[in-house]
Image (cartoon, rainbow, N blue to C red; front, side, top):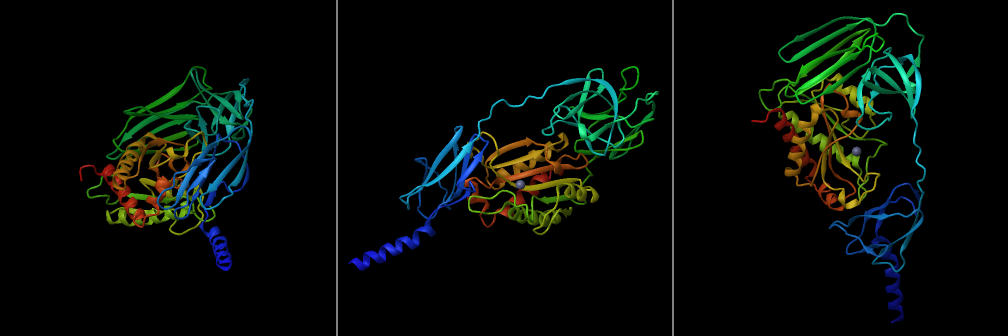
Length: 450
Ligand SMILES: [Zn+2]
C-alpha cells in the first residue's frame, strides 16, 4: 500500500508541471509598470481552472485566457492560482505614482527666418510628434517664419489666422532676407483620370492640404509678404482618388488621380499587400504563444493569390519571414505605383486604461480621408465573412498608411491577446477565409455593382 502511495505521489509530482498554466504576460514575476492595469495573458491545460487574486478567470475552449488587474500605486502582490496546485504563483508589480505631469509652456519668440533641413518634414497642427495632426510634409529648403516655441517644437506663422508646428531639430535659422518671395504663376489642367495644379513662386514656401466633403484644398502660404498671402486651389474630389505633391525650387505640382477605371473585377489595379512585422520583429504574442508576424504572412500570401485571380497586379513587402523597415515598405509601394495598400496585422492590448476583454474583434484603420471608404468596405466584409466582432473603423497615424499617393488601410483582423479571438485565428481556415473576406471588401470598394 505504501509503495502504491509513493508511486502515486511520484506520478503527481512529475505530471503536475506539464499540466500547469503558462503565462505569456507578464514576462517576469517582478515588474515595474506605468499603466493602470496589469495584464495576465496565457493558457491553461485541460480542465485546469485559474484564479487571479481570488477572481475566477475566463478560459476559452483551447485554454487561452487574458485577465486584467487594476493596479494601486506602489507594490501590488498578485496571486495566480491553478486548480492543480496548492500554492499560488506570486507576481509583484510595482506601479509608479504618476505625479506632476510635465506641462510644456509656450514661449513667444521674435519672428525669425528658418529653413527646413530635409524632405518630408511634418508640419503639424499641434506641438506633439504623434496623433492625427499633420498638415503637410514640407520639402527641404522651405523657408519658414518662426515666432514661438513649445515642447521641442517651433510655432510657424503661416498667415494671419493660421499657424503650424515643426520639430526644432528639423529646421535651422537663416539670415534675414531683404526681398520677400514672390508669386509667379498658377495653372490647372484637367485630364480624363487626373488633374494637375501648378503653383510657381520664387522660393520654396510652406503649404497645407485640407479636405472637406467635396473638395481638396491645396494652399501655399507666403508669410514673408507684406500682406496676408494665401494661394488656394480648390479641387473637386473624384469618388475614389489619391494624390501627390512634388516640388522643385519654388514650383509646386499637385496631382490628383482618380482610381483607374476597372472593367472586370480588379483587372489592372496595382495592389500592395503588406504583412506586418517579420524577422526579429515578432509583433504581438498570442495567449498560446503564436507570433503575429507568422499569421500576418499566411493571410497576406492567401490574399495575394486571391487578388491575382481577380486580375490585380500584386506586390508584397515580404513573402518570407524577414525584417522590412516601415520606410522600405512605403518606398516599395510607391516604386510599384500601388493604387491600393493593405497592411495585415493582428491586434494586442493597448497600453492604456482598458479592460482586456473589451479588446476583441476586427478593426480597420486609415489616416487620409481618401481611404475611409475602403476601410469601411473591408471591415464590413471581414466581420460578416469570418464572424469576428465589429471593433470599428478608426483613424491612426501609422507610417504605412500616411502617404496620400495610394488608398491605404491597416487591417487588425483579430486580437492576439483575446481568448475567444485566439480560437478563431488558430483555426486552420482562418488565413484563407480572412484573405477571402479582405479581397471581397476590396472588390466591393473598387467595383460595387459586381
Ligand atoms: Zn502588428
